[in-house]
Length: 404
Image (cartoon, rainbow, N blue to C red; front, side, top):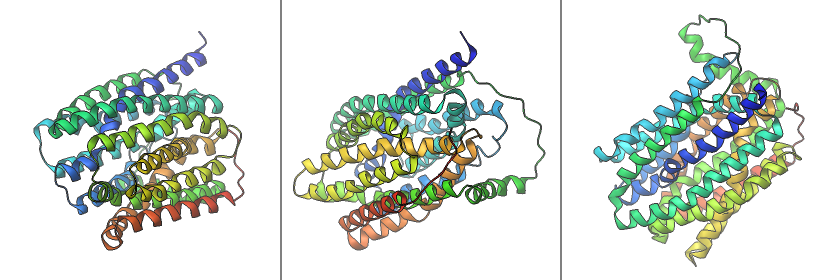
């Protein structure tokens, strides 16, 4: 078999299996705020702090991949170690009963999940052409979400019957997820040995921020896309602290209802729409796809407000959110490889990670304060309005970017 074809095959296999093996932990991770608030008695402050920490540590995570440029030999080790460390704390859940430990484990998870993304996406760019890349990424993600639909039903039933089971479930999910690291480590990859670097620690500290800033100045098309995504991402982070309060205090929903909304309604929307978003991305500029994504996600908080009248609106809202997330997942992850073209994509993905962290330092605490001052409904309406505005801003821009 041709070596290029072997690399493509190994990459596609790794995409599929990494999604399948990682999904159990992601399914539980989506319920983490709910577990904290409902069963561990976490305060609104802790929920807001968790929501803020996720993107803040995301900004710091790009130091993990800052030295990747021109160092293809480090890509796999970068992904493998990130995969190990992101899951390690959850292996201790059965023996530690603390809301603060769970907050720290969640922040650690997001740190290493984002830390490994630039290297993983660069491996994807090197092994698959643009059309194959978006198609393989979309189908593997959709497969993972379909698995999550089945898992969420079982998890919801188990937790409603025995809320303390979350500890053992996290242990099992983390152990299964570690198998994905083995699969990712077997991906075939071609690289050139890098020249040794001798860089002062101050330069290592400053360089990633400077490189991201310079990239945004050099590529105005990428900068326009990122600032449009910035407003949308701010809106999504703003609403997160209010969601737990709204679902538990206003709607009083159970674990099964929550799991059904997140994984079944949202999962179906994600799985059904991902291949369609992928096909559309082959024909339309990624920024215009993003503008429609923002519009779809913006419907979520508005429709969710109607769930106070009837629970069916709760599931409709999450189905629409899943459709939007199907596109958002593709757009965010593939924006780096798309704008990079023939260049190395880790710089572009790193800039996306850095900006996600910056907005995360402001939006969640502001959303938590507004949820207390205005009530959850006020924050939902503000979040939806910001999504609609970001859609309008991004759609009216004209973009020119290099073909991949």
